[in-house]
Image 1 (cartoon, rainbow, N blue to C red):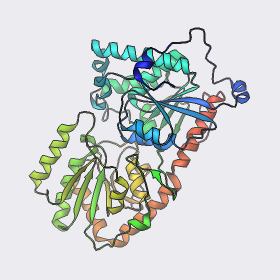
Image 2: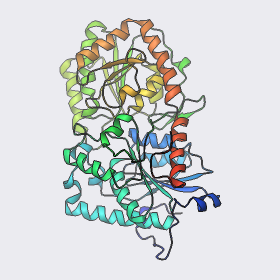
Image 3: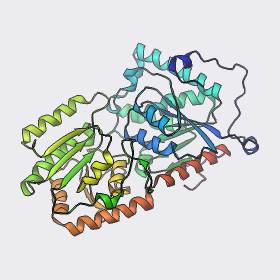
Image 4: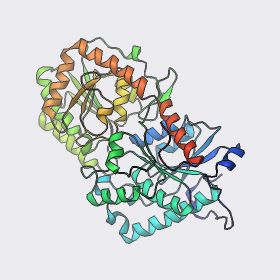
Length: 439
């Protein structure tokens, strides 16, 4: 078994080996061996897409599929995968490429000579590994793995599923990247999965392209499960109920990043405190991908607005489920359309009313006035008003929490997510190349 990156670089390619085509449904029916699925991600940091991947692969039917997660950089996701019995392989890519932020991507990211050499060498190693291991499908999980894994998969002649978790729009990505990605989406992937209908719409795919919307589900059963930070934990709603007259905590969970809107949350908090001075606000998450300057900026904003005694920066935590259970309200503050909003589902599952910005895939999760309140993006005053409405109306808050919990269980259970993706796998393995399977 290959486990070390230096071993992969020298792993021999079987020159005369014939890779069996997964579209040969006769050979698939005759074989009882699980189909070998390569799942690619450029990072092993615990971002939303990586947690969604972890939640998915741990429940994948191992009698039918053998998942191998190929990562382009090392990090905590590898240990999490090992803990749920999923093999991971590290094929290292230049840290400058791995850590480049989405909003700075462009030709310059890859066309600088050192990065270009690194990317080409990486693709060669990836192609060799894909060929030698005889994968029947490639499932990419991030923008960089879509492109690099897609190129490698095309050369290795393995069908490719792009799982797109980012909106391909100019308010989210550079204009040239949007144009290039939309063009590549038309001919590289065999199938495109979007984490929301809003995400799929931004790709502008032709009508005959095999595509499906599959929300990123979370585990809602009674047993231990993987939650937002990848830690097995329980989100028992009964245990999370707090008397309404206790000091209310309003929380936001997610990577510290400008587009995640923690600065909007802090400005809204300063307005809420004028009416509810006992209220506490918690910001859960840390900066990734070189965004430490923004984290420093929100610290400065807290001090400048004089709310340091009421606003806590908790950093990265491994007890996110417990923290959410203590919230009175969960807030989502993204300043551009969120592709999905997994933490919103987690808050709803825990019975918390939601205040969320109205853009991207969020309206597909939050029903305005029923499971939460949708507010305009970049508008701290309207956000503050919505928070105050829920703080002062116990019945409304409880009603939204109950409705949200019900909606999470009906629409966003991880088992539904797994079944939908397994249907897509089966369709491709049996020769499907157009959107003909209902998921």
